[in-house]
Length: 370
Image (cartoon, rainbow, N blue to C red; front, side, top):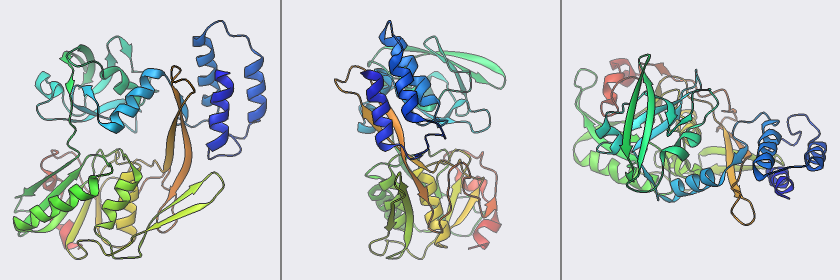
C-alpha cells in the first residue's frame, strides 16, 4: 500500500509525463509483486522507483526529513545557525553562511566548510542534498551534535549545542567603499525568500534612502530560493506595472503568466544584482525578471540553474514520511528555461568578498554600465 501510494503521488503531479521515457505503470506492477520483509525494504524500493526518474529533486522523504522541511518552512528550528548550499562542481554540501552569534559561529565553523559527517552520518559521497544534512544537524533544543567538516584539505571536528535559530533572511548596510563609486551605496542582502521578504526589503530600502544611499546593490549570493511568491513580489518592488516576471508551466503544459500588478516602490535608482553559482530557484526568477526587464546590471558569476518547482506530500497516517515531487518549471520573461542552464551575468566579477562587504566584489565599471 505504501508503494502504491508513493507511485500515485508522483503519477498525479510529476511534470515529465514520459517518466524519464519508461513504462511507469509497469514499474508500479513490478514493485507491487515483490514481497517485503520490513518497512525499510519497502522504503528502499520507493527510493529506487523515484531514482529511476533521473530527477534528484523528486525523492522519498523519511519521517524525520519530512518534519525537518516542514519545520524549516514554518520557522520552528533548533539547530546550529548555519546555512547550507550545494557546491555545484563537486556536488558536496557546504556552509554558505554562518549566522552571527549562533552555535556554529561561536564554535568556529566557517563559510565554505564542506560537511563530511554529522552525528556519525556520512555525507561525502556527492549525493547528499542540503536537506539531507539539515535533517541530521537539527534536533531537540539543548542537545549536542558532532560535525566533521573539510577545510583547506584538512578535517576539522566540532561538538555544537543546538539552540532555537531565528534566521535573519534580509540584512542591509551602507557600503562605504569610496574607491568604487561616489556617494553612498545601500546594500540589501537577501539570504532566502519567504512570504514576508518583499515587505522587509521595502522597509530596508526606505531605511537606506534615509541614510543617504542613492545607488543599491541587491546581494543574492548563496540564496537557494525559498518561496516563489517571495521572489516574484521582491522583483516587483523595482518594476513598473504589467511587466512579465515569470511563467510557470505545469505537467499539462498550462502556463501561469505572472506579471507585476502595480508600479513598484523604486523604478529609478541605480541597481546592481550580485549573484554566484549558488544563487538558485526563486532567486534566479528574481534575477531574470529584473535583468530581462532591463532594470539591473547583473554581476558575479553564472547562477546555479534550478528552474523547477517541487511540492511535498505526506503519506496517509503521517508515520511514513512523504515525497517531494517536481510539479512545474519556470521560464523567464523572455521564455528562457533556467533549469541546468543558470543565468549569465552582464559583468563577471569576483564573488568571494565578505557577506557584509559586497562592494569589495564590485569594480567602478559596474556602476558606469548603469
